[in-house]
Length: 216
Image 1 (cartoon, rainbow, N blue to C red):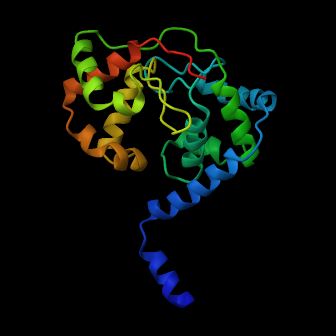
Image 2 (cartoon, one colour):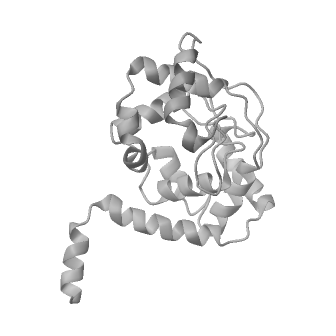
């Protein structure tokens, strides 16, 4: 196979497939680095403008709680924003900024710092009328991967969902179904598409009310 043929084949690949290859390569490079949490704390001062000084986000779901989220999960999300695999104007600007996190080492550092933050304050929750429904759905469809207490798994890059803002979780589910989160759409698409509006509200509310367990 000559170079011209290889180039032609690459041009036929969807953009997300090319980005996926680049993202996995960058993630491996970041995970091979030795994180500096102290430097990450300095970098996080700029993240705090949106995420809050304690990484608690906003209860209306506009900004997620990232305090105590698994390190590998945070690394993957930053890299995805950096390479256009995940879309949010604010985060894309931060992830590609030469002033905030210009180097892969910076990603390792700030992700480590955020993962070590102790979560404080209460999450934004729903009205509580669909929690039982949400608990049943979670047990049947989500717990096998995300854990009984929605604690996630750092080694497998499965996010901690317990205690996340309900409105943020709702938005991510809808974004995945609508194709605005390609990676999540591919991994969760059929399961999430099967949920109706009431299911989404119940599942998000249930997850927001789960008390986080420290699995670090």
